[in-house]
Length: 76
Image (cartoon, rainbow, N blue to C red):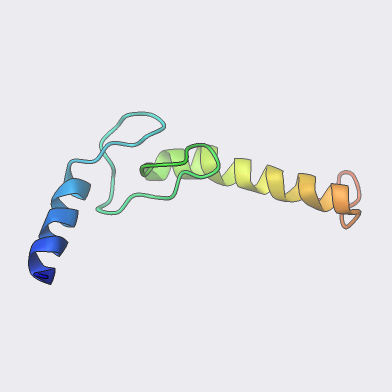
């Protein structure tokens, strides 16, 4: 197995990759994990900051509330 060839192929896929959420070209070579908003692909930094992270935080606080570990309004 030629690791250099595998790495180059992976790099070439990332260079022209588009954000799975907005469709823009990724703003860095690796992108960000878009879960829970998308199961596959990568997202750009803007979508990560304004969509993915707030969604994750909301899910976290929702779970904590269901478990009784957070009072209503405490996360603000």
